[in-house]
Length: 364
Image (tube, rainbow, N blue to C red; front, side, top):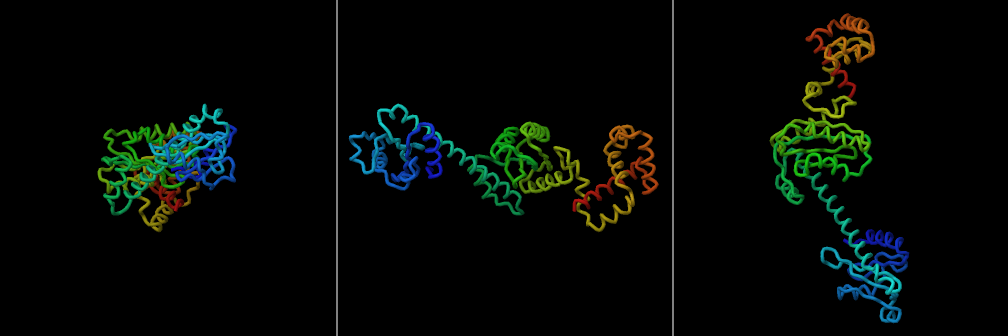
């Protein structure tokens, strides 16, 4: 627990504040950190006495000959979870040091506690990510999952739903991001962790109310307020652990197929596009080439905006900042070139599918 790295940080922080030399010894009495670097790795006989008795040791000028290499000062035990794990020594006149020696000891023990808590959080987070990794495997090792869940004090209860969050900008550290996300869902109802540097999984569970998308909207708003640039894809609700991997794949598809400026994309909203992804490339290319033919990018963009406006000419013209008659002219031109009328539902479906296939081909 008391590593040299931690001890050096404690010495750095306390020495700067007190303007006095401080030594930290491990549980064998060896100096592992000191304001005087020449003393590192030397045995500290005063510390050995403290470790032996469990009591503070005060060395006055007149007594220093009793301790080899000892200097006047005080030596105090460092306690962690009721165990002495080391000794902190402060060099100087003991009468001057006594008043703040206990304060230094307390600060040291608090710093150790903070390090311990941070390590615990990091360890628990690693277990969460291992659990999710196991859930994505073809054959789930339930024993391994249960063991890890028991260590972090969680249970997996249906229904389950997976979201994948992609970040272009992350101004927070990992633990802050995860804590913010878990708070929205409740720590017992969500497993959150990193898939890679810029992607986070959110596995929600045991939530019967159908408001996951609303909670994700809350996450998006809170993270955007912190400076994040994010998108989230949300998979379907599933009842079995073995289907969690399917919800995850859907969440990834939602991210891939959703609009770039759309913060939250639900898989069911892009399911038709997802089905098109399964068609072989040759068939897709032939289809989009036959339907769209030699349509210009300008006319294809017009079609996209027309479909986004639910075939409403007035709304589309307003969206595109063009005159209504200009839009009608373009739609007639599209019919002339392709043979499909964008204003008729059956033809509109064919044209929309061709555009989606074209977008899929470009992504590939």
